Every structure is written in C-alpha cells, then in structure tokens.
Image (spheres, rainbow over the protein chains, first blue to last red):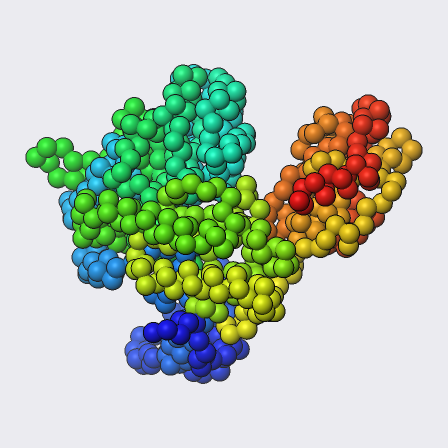
Length: 486
Length: 135
C-alpha cells in the first residue's frame, strides 16, 4: 500500500448518555416481584443516582461510536515517548479471563487461593530475575504508587538508622512524576542538571550529595533516551554519604535482561507492567507498579508479603514490623498482574532481552533517518527513544504542536511533545519493538513529508488536524476553566 | 511565536537573564515576566505566587508559572520581602500574556539592597542578550 494510512471515514456524532436517555427504556426485564415490599429505614432513603433510562442497544452503540473516535495501539503506531505503547498480545487477555482468576474472591482464605498466590509469587521471582534486585512487591497499583512506595522505603530506611533525611536529588532528565513522589513523602527535591552529553556528571552529584540527602531518583535510560553511563560511579558517591539510589523503571523497555540493576548500584526500582510488560494502558488505567529492592531493604516492603516455605503452601504474611504498611486494598491490580505474567511466560527470558534490543534498534533507526530533517540536540546512540526539536521548522513559524497535529492526519499517534523540558520544543519518539520496518519507514516518510509541507504548504500544519472528529482542542480554556463534572 | 521586533520592551524597566522585569516605584519594586518570556511560554493557565511577608534572596525562586506546555520557575531579580502580590492572576492568568507589564505584574517587593536594581540589565542590554540567543 503506497497511500498514507490516515484517510477519511464515516464516524458518528454521539450525545451524552444523559441526553440520549428516554424515561422508561430498559436494558432487560426484571421478573415480577413475588415477595412483599419491605419498608426501608428512613435514614437510608433518598433520591437515587441520576442515571438515564437506556436500552442495551443504546448503550452498545454509544460506546461503539466513542471507540470509533479513538486511536490505540490496536489502531496503529503510537510512538509516545517514555510511555512504551507496545502492542499488547491478546493471549494476555485470554489468560486474565480464565474463570479461575476472574472468579477468585479476594477474601478467600490462603488455602483456597493457592493458584492466585503462586502467580503473585512467581511473578515477583521473574521480575527479580529481570532486574537483578532480589526482593519484589507487586502491590503498587501504578508507576506513581511504585514511586511513592520507593520514597516510603527511603524514609523508613533512614529512620531505622536513627537519622531521617530531608532532601532527594532529582535530575532534569528524570521522569516528570519523580519530584511529586518525593514531595508527597515530605522530601524536598533538589534539581540536578545533566551535562552537555545529556547525562549526569558524577562531579555534580558529589557537589550536591550530603548527609541530609536521602538519595537520588534516577531514570535510566533517562528521558532523553540516553543511558546514564556514570551510574555506578554516581551510586558510589550516593552510598558513601549514606544515601540510597532509586531507579525509575519507566524506560526499562530499553534494558530488560541487558543491565543488572543491582550491579549498577540501584537499591530500589519500580517497574511499569503497563509499559514494559505489555499490559494495556492509556485511558487512565488500571496499571501496576511493582517495586524491586535489595535484600537489605526487603523488610520495608508493603504487607502482606506472599511467602512460600519449603514443603508448605503459599501464604500471605503480615508479620513484618518494619514494613511501610499496605499500599492498596488486597494485593494490587491482580488482573494486570496476570497479563504481565502471561507476557513474561509466553516471551521467555531470551525473547525479553531481544525485545529490548529491537526497541533500541528501532529508535536508532528513526533517529538516523530523521536527523538530517529534524534538529537532534543530542546526537549520540540512543536507547529506546530519541528526542528531536522543532528548531529547523521554527524559521517557518511552525512549532512542535503543529507537527504533532499534522502527524495525526497521516494516521500516527503523535509522539510525546514538549518533554523533557531540557529540550526546547521537544519531540520525543519511542517506536517500541512491536513496530515492523515497514511501519517505521511509513512513519519516517510521514515526518519527512511534514517537513516539506513546513516550507511548501505551512497551512496544512497550522490548520491541522482537519480530518479527525475534533480539530484542535482549546487546551488553554480547558486548563483555565476546567469543567470536571457532566 | 513572534519575532523579537514584534514584542514590546518598555524603556523604564530593568530585566534579568531569566526574563523577569523589575520596575522601581518609590521604595518598592514591581516584578513580572517580559513579553519575550510570555511569548515563549505560550498561553499561561496558572501562576503560583508567594505569601506577603515571605523573604527571598536575589535569584531565589518566588513562584511558578504554568502554561499549556510547561511549568517554569520565577526568580527574584533582587532580594527582598514580598509587600504585595497580584491576586487577580488567580482568576485571570491570561493577563500575563495580554499585558505582561501592567495587569500581568506578579509581585511587589521591599528590596533588601536597593542598589541591586542598578545592576540589572536595561532594555538595550536585554535586547542584545535576546538577539544573541536567537542566532
């Protein structure tokens, strides 16, 4: 197929369900009541929720129409940098839908939940093998909650040494949520500038690391898609002052099975199962943010812990007095954990490593093919993503936002834009390993065509997008006057 | 984004390398961000300002400005105590875009060392710096 993948098509306007409802419509018929009406206690009487009356077909068409406005990894390439929008194999869904899992009740006693507990236990062991960090909790429900867990472990560790600390070092190329997680735990974040190569300079860390600093939160590879080559030296500096090293695993897709995080000096690491381990994401969840730590920090992990003693059944263990407590009701987002388990088992160790290798290869292929067209602020071998800027297009008054909007009309989800902040007008592209060469070539061709339009027909960019259901949203009005209720 | 020649920079203000402006008004100094800064940031949606009575050193971070693209820090052109803040920005942050030197002012300070004002860039020096950044 030579034509651009983005084209026209019939989609439907769709009102809100409240506007669509008609009094008296029903999704199904209830059997006639054959018991006497019982009076309700006055204290629990009141108006019911304002739900519209709808038939089954009303509801199915409503959501089908909305889904037709949508773009997901099942529609096409979604190179949203640092989000790892890889394809999610359907076998994961099949395993998660097994009735033994979907029917498991979280309040069943341990002896009736052996399969579910074994899955949690084994998944922890697999994640330990992938990262090199021996102790794992799969309880945190999102990357942000994993970060929070990590910071709680930092706090608990220093408290156990009798010397609580107040600051955390955070590089300017760290994942954007890190300062918020540190602040939520009461730490003051200290910004660390990266050097002209786009990575951390040990001398900088030496100057900032002191005995009131709990440690550092490093994203490796960082949000420029570059590997922090000095991580071992940096970890030594931090450890020598009694601090801990936290690694944000947002970009773990670049280094599965390639880097032993424990050997690189990391004490605490969170993973995003919804990125690296192919569980679905986008649209707000649910996710899962397991945390992996060194043996010395295991006692601080959240309870309950899943344990297995030799010749005994799997069980949940609550007796961990140094634990930071529990982070989530029950044991985390279990259905997501089943999907990640399914992914790891169906790939196997060798293929996980190969996935990372191909993710890095794909990003470098895009980087090399576009670096003569788009400004590449850090021209080095990248990891799983590459960051361009709009500098070459600015002279025609075209910005990153225009490029991103136009790319939609070529049938691609836009990359991450205006992040990381260290690159002005950043365009952050992460193709992942699941795009084949043909798709990468189509993406590169679209980006080059957009650059030509910048010079020859700039209105195509400034007025984009024209094809999608909605054109440019008024982001400013949405931010200034948010309307958060229906 | 606009060309520098399309932006206004009043003669009676002083400027910083971080694109704040300062204006002497009797014993106090009014502070905001320059037309160049607001143009680079794009539509501003939120301005976070300090409390009256807070004190900061020169170069200290006194607040943040959030646009649809990013959050940026605001730095004190001179050290001093916050005498007043522009509370209207809470409801109308767009004033920073529409009128950066008048309705879009951010804070008024009582300077610790009034001489720091004269060390700031005048319009000519600021324009030279901006032109240097463009090339």
